[in-house]
Length: 358
Image (tube, rainbow, N blue to C red; front, top):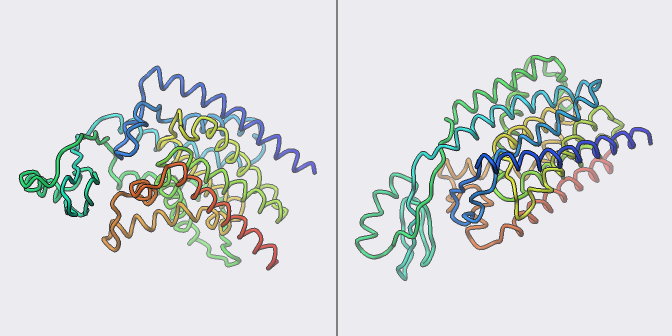
């Protein structure tokens, strides 16, 4: 009972702190005009929403770490979050610069039109993003099959190679602490834990980053996955694993107060990098990495689908999958509800199966 009380208190402290910091950071970002410029046409209404809100998540986690400074696993989790958040912050700052402006074409004919890799049905719109699409555009315009209906600014982004290298370094930081057990699923893997941790850090960061494309989507999924990890840890009697996930739950739900639909602040790469790195770090340090991965299934599946799209195995009109669902007519609120509920079902199912087997 005492452990449960402490976890509830930790959650309340973190939640309230994150709500306060989010309100504070949001005001500063608005004053500085650090706002979002969506490239997805369906999200034009989000233009002007403050971004880099992940700073509030980092502040909330840092305050929790200062209160529970004797908890080694929590301190290491927050340090990794801070390192990843800084990497994300640099990418967010770079994104404030506009790289190019892409035209938005609409099929005005009565037949499907192919432009680049996309096939537009009558009335459908798409950005002229690829080199092939730009080559196709003049002929389609001349034949009166499409018309330009707008322009979309494209943000400057850091090179994927550089971001992956930075994420690998973060993984090395974690392994260098010596705090991660070399036992995986009951097997001693020794030095091979290093690539496992690095892969986990890179995979988790990019999974959460990819899913962060709709109001409350990433924060909600992380909240559900984290509280599920808390419950799983408590069932195991693994109290040391529960505290970091409790803090992650607190910052996620605290941020959701302002990030739920319609969001008044966006976490940006600062937040998604921090949450992704912190979540998987808590899983490694608490020795429940197998359950943590299962709980994060939806973002992981989204990454796999996007990789299949980039490898030309499948074709999405808009990447990632949740944007395709929105493009096909499913509302943002329904997509978020679908992703949240699916995550909840997966987590509950995994907990029930574990209790049934063990």
